[in-house]
Image (cartoon, rainbow, N blue to C red; front, side, top):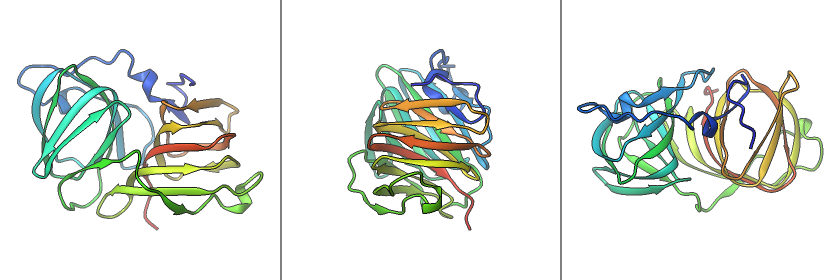
Length: 240
């Protein structure tokens, strides 16, 4: 893991969450009062961290379509369709205008990515299943590769109504890619493997299984994975 928190290309969110204060002010919505935004370029999205206190409460996601990842601890979320129990390393999507209740016995640290500009869709919460079946997906363009074409698979389990914001699971066999310019913004949590990035300024970071990080919009960086990689992704990309 590379504990880069100030690099304008790839930001280690787990390192940023180390000293996060809890949003436990009485009479407030912990998902609002405890939210700490990360200063980065992320298009029409906001990315932040939340130390959820032990206890229970209610909230409504009325600002956008949102992906919530449990960095540490456990949390249960409940909407009109039922409850989801989530442990560290698990995540869920929340559609705009979804009210839900939450509870946590020992508190939890969360990573949140919220797409602010999407239209309203169908309210609800959706588990991002780390063990979901994956289907073949397009590899990087041939002109960007520095070796063999990898075998890639994916499963998008949550998306905004305009499909600009998507969350799911992706995996790939090893590959190397030349630097590309990120017109989009992507937040990743590695379930397996490791990958090394080098940006346009020569800064280098290696992230491995268990790391959670974001590559901001406007970054330019390469990709080098020497082993198979599986990741959870939350991605905003401007529709064509």
